[in-house]
Image (tube, rainbow, N blue to C red):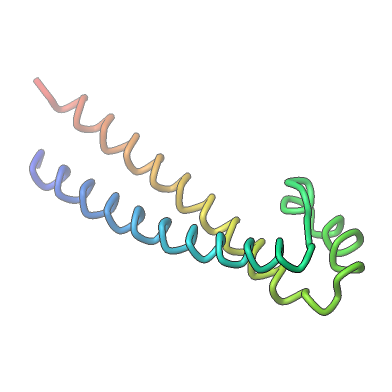
Length: 100
């Protein structure tokens, strides 16, 4: 049981880590393109789509696809990071509970 749980933890963590690195690289690439074109926005725009549409996309309608790609990559990277922490916490807790 303990070996299976450790294996599942390692494989899941490895998969989530690789996926997170992939999306972070994608996010950095889109950020570089947006910065070169002078598009800047804050965390409030990432979390509030209506504010993003009103303030940023209204100023840069031709870059909407790139902006939305960047926002979606950031959100997915945050979700994967959160999932990674949750999986590690749960598996660590179970392993600590069953360790005698």
